[in-house]
Length: 209
Image (cartoon, rainbow, N blue to C red; front, top):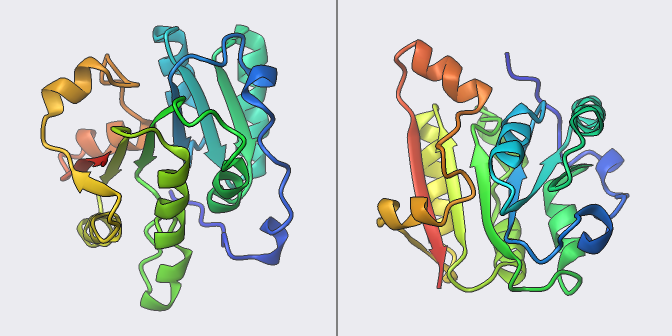
């Protein structure tokens, strides 16, 4: 079951910034992947344990999930993963000018909240401002990955990214996999749920030009 949180609430306007990368990662110069809407954190925890050549940063708007995910990191002593609580757009915007621009290699949106009602579309995580902020933070050739089991939401996200002059649809999936944050093609809990029920998964990759 999806647990919706209104990202436009005044509660999220004041943020606790993402710390400098050299304070949260043992090796801050490794390629960085940001997962927006990291949920319980299990997906990123698996990735970080499988792939020590990347750093992973999970952004999640539900504070309880972030606290639980951080507890798991401490238990497993994972040094290439960090979770942050807050509104993703505010957090990303705050990082512009603070991160080495060659570090951020990719960003993923895995099954974000659909916000079905038209009047709530402005609450959807992918908005022009966020895509612009990601572009300012991301290295040239960096990739955005999107996945959803909701066709209308996927179309909305796809159009929102394509409208940006900074990204184009990226079709060379084999090449993307060879330098991917997820080399073993691990699945999120939502993706496993969708696959078990033989439902459609819509996905696409975009490259910063």
